[in-house]
Amino acid sequence: MVGPSRQSLPQWMSAASSVDVDGAANLSRSDASPSSPSHRRSSYSDANMGFGVRALSAAGAAFLSAILMNPLDVVKTRLQAQAAGVPYYPSQHQYGRQMTSLGPNGILSDIRCFPSCARGGIFASGPVCPPDCFQYKGTMDVFYKVVRQEGFARLWRGTNAALALAVPTVGIYLPCYDIFRNWIEQFTTCNAPNLTPYGPLVAGSLARSLACITCSPIELARTRMQAYKEFRNGAKPPGMWKTLLGVLSAHKSANNHQNLQSYRIMWMGVGAQLARDVPFSAICWSTLEPIRRRLLALVGEEGNVSSILGANFSAGFVAGSLAAAATCPLDVAKTRRQIETDLSRALKMTTRQTLVEMWRDGGPSGLFTGVGPRVGRAGPSVGIVVSFYEVVKYVLHQRHINS
Image (cartoon, helix red, strand yellow):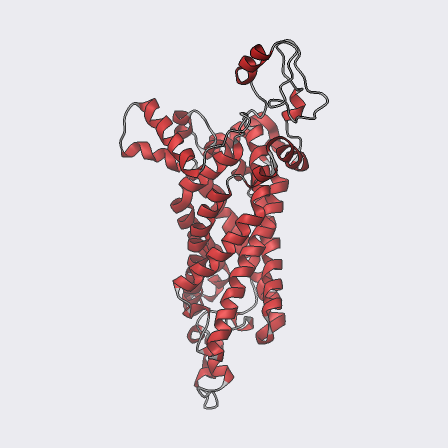
């Protein structure tokens, strides 16, 4: 994978001009006065931006993406959780008492799949609705049944955790990716030019690992909030902090001791998350960078906000979709590990063991459970985050050179 040379990038995207070997002579030309446009463009670049500016741009992008894409994340998690055995059908003990109190001829609208379901009713001690009323058959079926049975707002279940996760994750991820990429490309340009095209792959992997480990407890809470369904009518499901405290207290009570080792459960599934996110970032950035550099090379220094937005969104959409499809088995493994109710088993599970179980239970289709909503979410999400982030950087750069 060899992308266009760094000279083809607009100045607001490229690393510091001092390391641009082929163009270094231009900075020493007598006609490059401090007031000339070329000097002003060369005096400020992506490498000059502080971490705070990058983090602010990334946090805004993450906020927008989390709000828009959360329903697809809920759908994906529900499909994966169902394949792992999470019940979405009310069990006997959840409605047995209510059936006894109402008598054999009662109609329980609050435990049917929907109040107007024509198939609902009480038949001796059997269920009020057929099992298929509570089983998800695909992406659109999850949308339909979640809205019908739980309400439209439930598609945004876990949004508070998604926002709490997205802002620090992307606030760490994208700025660190920029900084690592610039460092790597500066070093390789001077010392090993053949390795320069691999800078985005290494930078993306390092940045994602750092963000993943830092925010893993919030990812655990979000997955559990999205995976489980509340059967009690009118009951408010636990929020992010109650979910985390519930996991922690369950582990402590099971082990009958409280020490620092108990908090290890908060990072349950972090190995599977790293196994998913690091390859995702490596594939995503090594695909995204050459695509957007080719698109931006067509625009050059004459690009405006619309062209910058279009180039970055297009590159992000393609790269995110490919990376999401390729890493879907690892995403399913991450979900399985984080929704495991036997916490002692969860701590002993490995990603490899989980993948073997998935293959044994569902074959190839089991490995790619939820791939549709995952790809449908990841493509636009990466496009939104990257384009918003780069547009903000571009606007800040334009303000700087015009001041």
